[in-house]
Length: 283
Ligand code: ATP
Ligand code: MG
Image (cartoon, rainbow, N blue to C red; front, side):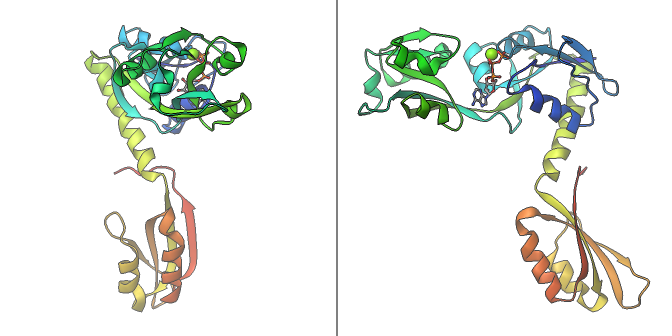
């Protein structure tokens, strides 16, 4: 039984659970439970605040975790970053009052900066040779300048709307983040085997993203042209139809090419074209 730590509530909770479900793992995420087991996969979910996930994975309380890269970087515990997961995207940026001129990063020399990410900020300021005072606050960082707690802030930004509504402007994008799958550095061989199965399923889900299944009827005389239009994973599937001189052709195409392919196929006589969503592609 492999234990995975995921956020108990908050921005990453739903997408973490949805990702596991998309991998065919049945999870009971009734939020009041602290620990729960999957009924069809050797996985146990440990629900925690995101701040604590890097620690529990690094000390082996959980073998895996799903958490923002920002938390991993800030906490600095030793863990392996196994996969970037493509959700929870955000950045941590420096922002200053809208009316201020911004000459460059030297603006921050001697200033007070409020943040919940003191380690990432400290490393950034050091790399730029800037001396500033870091004020650590754990919530509502964006109100710090208006409240007189600090001159500027270093905080998570996704759309930038919160900054604007607090009279601030983003001036330096310092750290790009997204949700990541992390693992303990010393997994047992059983845990490694479960992780490998998870990675195999993740890869299948990833390959199928942005792809459609296409099937159509085509005159046999146009088959060679159709196969040229539709290079498939190996080659398109061709099945005979009851009507003589016609066949059914099946293939997988990228979403972005779909309408160009359909146009080209219609031009050579394709009929009854069906476009279907693909759940998984297993290579
Ligand atoms: P917890 O109660 O678990 O400590 P939290 O309040 O610290 O939750 P959330 O606001 O739920 O954290 O954000 C969790 C993670 O979601 C962040 O660490 C970050 O990686 C990611 N994220 C993506 N977009 C945003 C955003 N606009 N604001 C904050 N976090 C974001
Ligand atoms: Mg948190």
